[in-house]
Length: 392
Image (tube, rainbow, N blue to C red; front, side, top):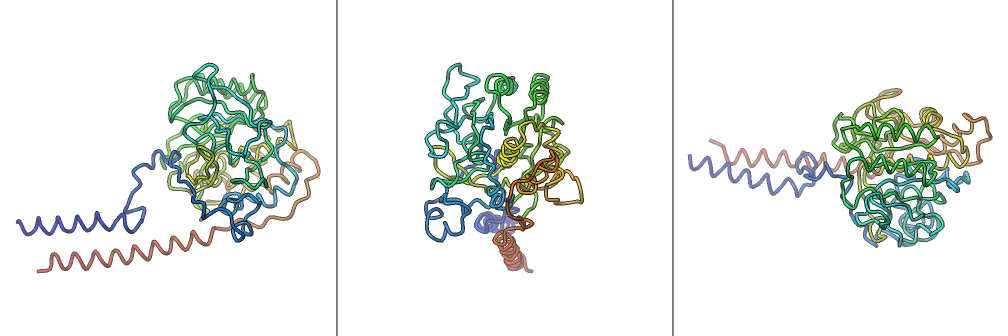
């Protein structure tokens, strides 16, 4: 009996040691995956500036070469349309925005409003709101950090939390403030909960009735539970894909997913102005928000129904043909959306080059094959250990 216990203990120790070393998600499960959109990894300076990196980048922003998501949604072609989001007011309802980054000049980043502390600062302590604001509207070709989708959009931080939680009712109040006090055209709401309050439903309907487009995250639990307000019909719910153009494991599967966008290992500005990578549907939503800002510049009267029709016509279909609960209508494509909007409104499309169909990142596929190889090797090692421990 003692010998069996000893062998079992040895096997358990081997499993515990090898699983994290191999780095295979199925064996070394991330215990913080339910809070995935608060896990920020600072990007080392060696991955930034340099002749090779700048040559591979889309802009002269030093971390541009790392922004795979921008390439996948076609921003290299879309930026050549001349659309920048200029004059469009975008509310970032979140943890605030860190101002001292070099990416948001005073003319574009307004003071906004602290919804909990009257007269309080909207500076960001967690980096979550700043990360979102960077994807939407970080300055482009200024030799600093990253490039945002709508680099001349006006950003209004509406702070609803100082950490990870938003008190009851504050989110709805923030939507009213975005509409009535700041006259925003687009709202990014990268938060949500399974429970829908009457106040939130009414606030969303109020904003949409006034032509405001609300783009939302849809949850990071990897299940089919609906999160609100992203699950409301009046909002644009956004799921996440990875570099392999697959649904991210944390992205929900339900009918709240209208479209998808890059949301796994994306790059943006975070706390104290450093560049970070992070994952979550919180960060796929601002890709769609930025696109809404570009289209609002060209078509100021575009409302939610218009935007949905344009996204449906222009997104790159993934998964099952047509609509499905994992990818919605597909992954957004900025050049196709710009052309679809022009056709929808009966105007001339801006001149810009054709953008090729998106393709998975080859490096991502190599990583997958590498993991499979490691898994095969690990299984063989376990087989040898078990055979040696328990033979006879």
